[in-house]
Amino acid sequence: MSRPEHQAPPEIFYDDDEASKYTGNSRIKNIQASMTHRAIELLNLPDWKADSGALILDVGCGSGLSGEILTEYGHEWVGFDISPSMLEIAIARDVEGDPILADGGQGVPFRAGSFDGAISISVLQWLCNADSTSHSPMARLLSFFTTLHASLSRGARAVFQFYPQDDDQVKMIMTSATKAGFGGGLVVDYPNSKKAKKFYLVLWSGGVMVRPRGMEEYGQETAEGQELPQGLTAEHEQDGAAGGRSRVKFENKRERDLSKSKSKRARKGKDGFGMEKGSKEWVLRKKELYRKRGKEDVPTDSKFTGRKRKPLF
Image (cartoon, rainbow, N blue to C red; front, side):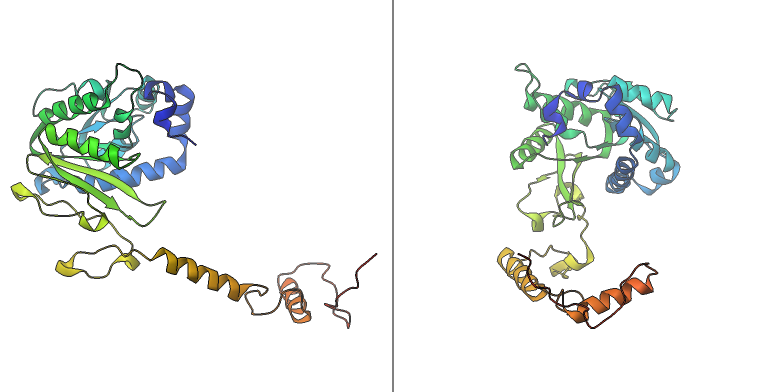
């Protein structure tokens, strides 16, 4: 299945039907909430702002799913989105933030120093898509990051959860952010998991952009006293690397394939009890289990149980 941003521009893709399905899907809402919690954590707001509430910009706020989490934290928020259908649902749901219609590729439409931070969930990759020959992804990204940089207060962070298409797209995004004056880098949660793996671009004013050079390299100290947060890893992936930093263990593919092959050979022709399938012992065991589970019409045991029948001609 092709990526959504390749099917149509966001204002067309998220029509009334798609916007309604997206907002009403319980699985999507749970995932969105989890990623929003993580983005707020990566914002690393000062304690006094976290306690008293900050003013946060929600980039691509959609129907207000991430905004609801910001409200739960006690923050005020303003959001913008390019899909009118999404914004109509947000208004109908009576979200407590202020959603407006705007295209991030044309720039962030707020005055300088307005926000204490910015978050964005599953939006950034849409700016990389050229819907027509007049659209330049690099120009749209640069316009977005430049105006976003201006709209943030001094020292504020911006956190973007996104789904990069490839390494070239990541490089283009980070290059645009650097040209706009941001420092920061990528944080990758659960890098060894296909389903749980998540990319977060963490940005702040000034400093150095940490280039991704492999999963082990995320999380270096940068200039300006800022430090890129560590990506989350499963407990079994941590090995107590030097400096207390958890590094990801990469299992050798050949060893993994050999292990699977041996396991399959060991299980071939046997069930979980070590019995050969189809044998008399296996049939008796199955019958016993069926009876314990209350299954009716289980054949009675006899001297013919499990016998091998002659082929029919």
